[in-house]
Length: 320
Image 1 (cartoon, rainbow, N blue to C red):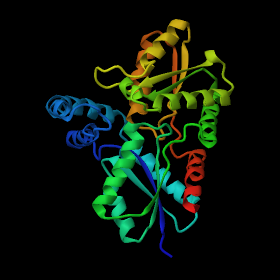
Image 2: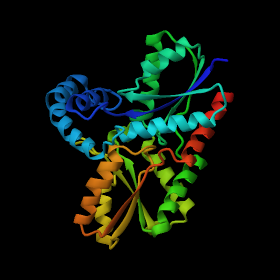
Image 3: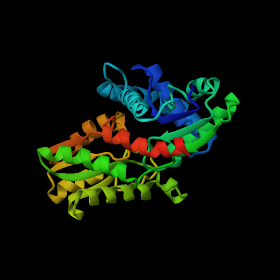
Image 4: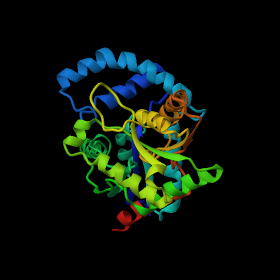
C-alpha cells in the first residue's frame, strides 16, 4: 500500500560543495529571506549583493573548509542519518523525507514526488527546539509557498517547537552525563543569537532558550554557579540578545573558572556554528583569556535518544 503520510524533517541548509560559488549561492538565498534579515529590501539587497556576499563568501568558505568531511557538509550528513534512523522507528507505510530551507534537498524537489505518489498528509518537523520567526516561521511559510507552486493541498501537521519536551531535555542530559565521565566542569549553554529587535517585536525565542536551559540545569542537578548561558553567531552591527557567548567565556575566566564544557542545546546537528565557531574560534578566545581547558559537547545528531524524541513528536501527528 503506498504511503499516504509523510514526515518531513527540515533544517537550515548548507552549501552543496566546498567552493566559492556554492557558498555564495547559499548565503544569497539565506540572507535574502526577509524573515531572516528584517530590513527594507531597497536598503538591504544592494548592501547584500554589493558588499556582504563578495566579502563574506570567502570568509565563510574558509570556515567550512575547517569542518568539511569526506562525505560533505556535517549538517547534511547528520540530517541524512537522522532521516534514516527515524524512518526505522515509524510504522509503515509512513515515509520520512529531508528538506532544507535553503539549498538542497529543496522543498520543491521533496514535495513533488510526494504529490505524485498521492501522499495526502504531511507532518513537518523543523529541527529547531526553540521557535523563532527566523527559523521556524520561515520554514512554515516556505512550505506553504512551495505547496501553492505545486498545486498540492495535503493536510498539514506542523510541529512548531519543543523547548520543554521531556525527551529533548532527557537526551541532552544523557549526552552531557556521558561526557562528564571524564570529569565535570562548568557548563556553558550556547544558543544561536538573535537581533534584540526581533525579541522586542514579540519573538519568543530567547524566553524559550531560557526555559530549556533552566530545565536542563535542573535535570543535571546544577547549582546557579555551575552553569551559564550565552548567545553566539552575531551578524552585523545591530544589538543582539545577550549575554554574548564570547563575553560569557571571558567573564568565566575573570571569575576564576579555568575549565569549561560548552553545549549548544539549540542545534539539533553539528554544523559550522558548533564545529568551527564554538570548537575553534571560541576555544581559542577562552584559552587566550587565560582559560586552561575547553571541551565542546557534540550536538545530539543521530543519537538514539534524539531519534526517539523525534518519534515521540511526530507519531501522534501521524496517527491523529
